[in-house]
Image 1 (cartoon, rainbow, N blue to C red):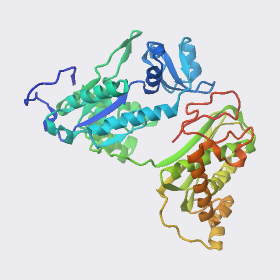
Image 2: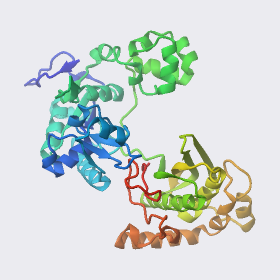
Image 3: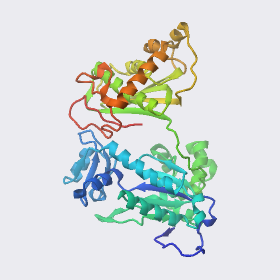
Image 4: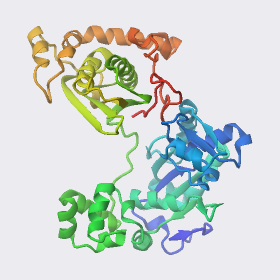
Length: 467
């Protein structure tokens, strides 16, 4: 692995230079992005332990500065635990709109380096810079130049991994980051390059969970075989690996352990689903309150669908009870839809299947999938077709409560378009479903609102994740 080497001047390149690589891929990952944006906007926070996330008792940490990591704070940790470990932390609720604004400027920097950019969330991306080397620069020089541009234009730091595959570049960017050693923050190299001939030495010592496709269940199966590192995976006979984790996963892991990852960088990859979920500050038993909160989630999810010009056929409702057990229900419509009336009726029927058990609900979520272009031609439906759509379960069957909404899709689409126009002009809260105007309604849900858990103490306050 090559670290810290200065770029070579002149047309000659050292052995292993990426001028002969089949591909050169960068993985760019911002350092403590959300927390760094907060420090950028308020320099008084510089050098202090800053933690961003849900500030309520059920909140989780979204990001934290390295000064907070010295105390053992990390992302996805319950905020209560973060406060316990670091009593002096500056805890901030997070500002999704601001992070999205900075992210847009960040991705503009990426696109000036290459048009082949695959965004992974707000703060990281893969860049295929193979064609960007025409001016003679190699992967390291392009990575260093990109880091400098991000620092100059945005005032933020990023770490960059360089390799011939997405797997290697992703793992290399982790090695490029700052670390906490013996209670002190150690700056990272910023850029780590892994040449093709160095891949085996780089990959083999890594833990098996470093490979894509290895989740907790797969890791446990492999551990029962004594497999702990990538080297152990690479050295396993193919038949043994496939018997333990299945043929498809076994072949994938064997290839990745050998450094074989041909996946391309895919620009503008469309999302496969759109969803919202809410974690309640207190468990909710009242089904009427749950239905009002579901209306709010569906309203936000369908608004996102229409904003991106898409519609959905499959509706999934997720409920997590107070004891953390979780159930999901899904149903697929005969035709795609994009209005809260059509998709919301299906979601409400699904919620009825799992609510009303007397158990308190900790989290409620809705997801819309099987996406299609909104302008896709729709087949006109006769009255008996609409009635039949409400019978049965599974693919092609709608919930009974969806019959009236499915009966007039064009009318509901016109209503949704009018509401969208008003909201565009006067704000998301200017028009809301009537059920959201009460004390338990919550009003219109905003993108990124309470994304990492509830901030207040009432059951009506929302939190969760945008899909």
